[in-house]
Image (cartoon, rainbow, N blue to C red):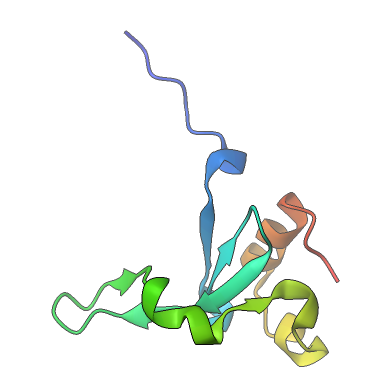
Amino acid sequence: MKHKPANKLNLRYRRLSSVGCWLDTKTGYIFPIHINNYSAKKTLDIAQDTDMIVHITDCSDEWFEYLSLRDSSILDLYNFTK
């Protein structure tokens, strides 16, 4: 049985490495990437970041300027462009 390739629009959380954030593609909220001290892997930890969650429309122009082309294309894919 062949598996269908994952559709990028089905991914709820996308990493925006250039600005150190995760994007919730359903709500447009972003929150910081944390480094897990034990494994040195970037992890998604929403529960501890509730005080740092910001909607993408509240981000500054400077934040958008720091986006890499790859990360900017992710925002375009989900219609979160400024």
